[in-house]
Length: 120
Image (cartoon, rainbow, N blue to C red; front, side):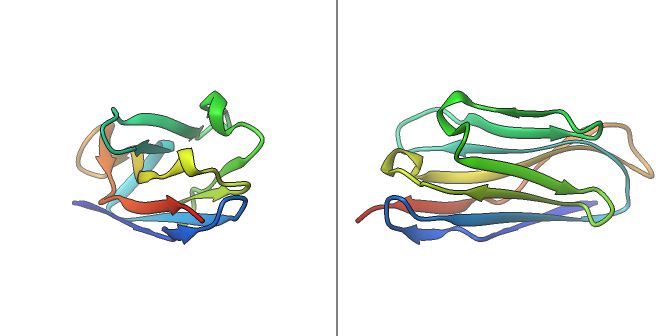
């Protein structure tokens, strides 16, 4: 069993910052990819950022230069630092991990979601 716990969402004014965290627990053997997705009301879930075990990082164009993803494989935690937030960043943010446990091969796991609201 793998459990993901997200934290760090909230309400912030445009131009503000938030830092999301996602901590995974369980019998984790190897972490392959850690990432963040978001889903705004009435829209499909979209990829925000990913970081792989070899350090490769990808961002959706709309957040480049404003968001930074980082991970701590030893602690099984992934972070998303969000700066210069805009109203269009308002969404529920989901942590997504691709990992293997001691009893199963690579699989995908999702966090419960944390609300980010950007408004004046």
